[in-house]
Length: 309
Image 1: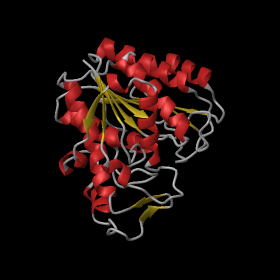
Image 2: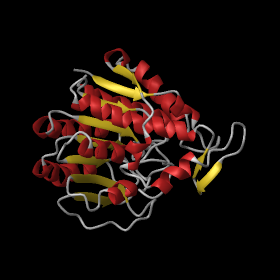
Image 3: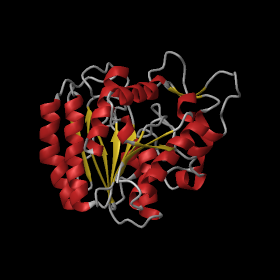
Image 4: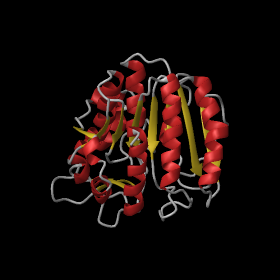
């Protein structure tokens, strides 16, 4: 079985202004690096479908959905602001449906054994999107929607969400705070956006704050000492990754010091857990990463590890 990449041109049509770091160029940078790395021919490319609203509603309120659906500017008009750094254009609704649809379709394909694992090269990202509202560049929480689909539609009993974005996945944490079927494991720079006070670590919530300037050695120790024991004790039947690459040392939107080898190493460790407990099942979704060169290189390292190339 192969590794698949899910994407769609609609995801490049959403944008929030030429100044905005969460730009369509991010997906182009990933595509270019995949070609330059000479692994593109070994990856199966699949088109992201449009998610149905029922899938989104498993994680988001009717009001959260309406904010994105009902406030689209018409073609040629200005953006509709949701918060200080998040806005809609005429293509945002369709792009958000593609992003969520990619995560759900990848989940089905992995569970059905069509592919070994998947990376969803989509935008807008998702892990800040709260059940009640979009925020922080994010419209719908793609990973949370896919995890809900795995549990409530496909009948899995335990899934894990692992988030290695530099920013805390507050929307994911809120979505699964009281959900015993989900283990969330993450690290994040703190104090930093979204400026949440860290919640206590529990068997189902291993979200570890790290100071600015933390490098790969600190993150690797955290993975070995905190993530892996929790994941192996939980025995997830599927792993979802919120794959943000803005903890890279070249990314000015973060303040940490990771490099490509760190992302590959984390992915390999998650692959080991997935092989042991989850039949190898992993779906990864793009979150942050705003230095275009570092983003493309890091995604290639991540995908090489998923594909075992």
